[in-house]
Image 1 (cartoon, rainbow, N blue to C red):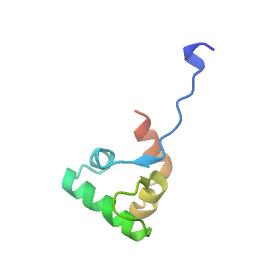
Image 2: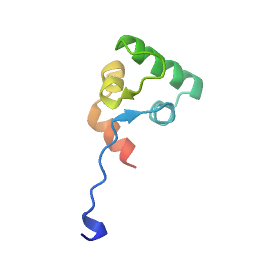
Image 3: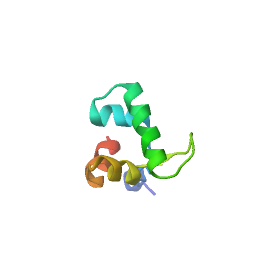
Image 4: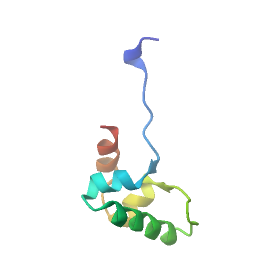
Amino acid sequence: MPNSHILIPNRIVIYAKDIRNITGRSERTARKMLQQIREANGKKRGDLVTVVEFCRFTGIEEELVTQFLMY
């Protein structure tokens, strides 16, 4: 299959660096936000946060976030 037909899957997980880039907030604030999202979803420290969970927490449309993460 030619390289032009390879599909790159969308990411499921969001990281502090992504939150920094999306919101313009500091690294520390982004990490704090991740922790708040974990707590709101009953997750433990270090558990991964999904894009869907981030979007529910912030109210940002999932489509906007996934488009942003593709680039």
